[in-house]
Length: 335
Image (cartoon, rainbow, N blue to C red):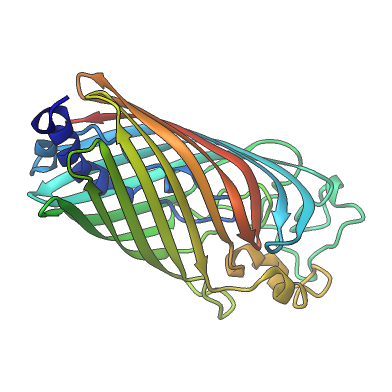
């Protein structure tokens, strides 16, 4: 495989990879979203980043959580959450080097354990459980062992794409907001029901005379304040990939966040026995720090279709669900 052939095509294909990486992130919840860490296919052509081109994709998401990571040394056995869903995304180049992204996931979550979040004392599962001093009957009871589905947060953003001597840079501004007034109080909640504004940039480069490439992403996320508390945070993504041939690429990656908010220890002192408003809003004001690692591949199916898949797991966390694996399979159609 010569340098100017498939390798050269793979190098410029990174321009597309950069185009969607920052946009793929949906609003962070205590349960990490898998498409927050899986980059878009690395097999798109550079010409597709010009005005009028773009891509649509649909992904299947499956995440399994068991336990709660209090800090790096302590895990609480608070039960298991199974999350299944689909994510819909659209990228459109409205001008040369400028793209618009819109995305939304629809998730179906189930919590199984004997420690439910009880908005009122009415559910039978809440007998003998702590009950809010100020009940919230408007909050749907989600922790009954059944699947509950909802659209989560909408993400809209724009990216500028540029190539500087083979180093592909993509600064991005994106905004995520709740698609509707969904329930956020529950182990089976789909997201945090807060808005988030992310400023980020991604750098990618293919090593000279090599099929190897790397990608580095950093973002800072500003969030809505709840009870006077911000959970603004830093996000970091690192990826090392290899173009096997013109159709197949493989990758290993890490992704995570570290930021503001209450730790489990500090917040626990404010719960008043899990009965007050701090407990009701705890998922919106906790820090939810974590790092995960995974592997994935992209396969060019032809006719502008690309199949991508990835799996990751958490290896460090503070005040966050311990996800044992997060799996994604995505079909992308470029135009």
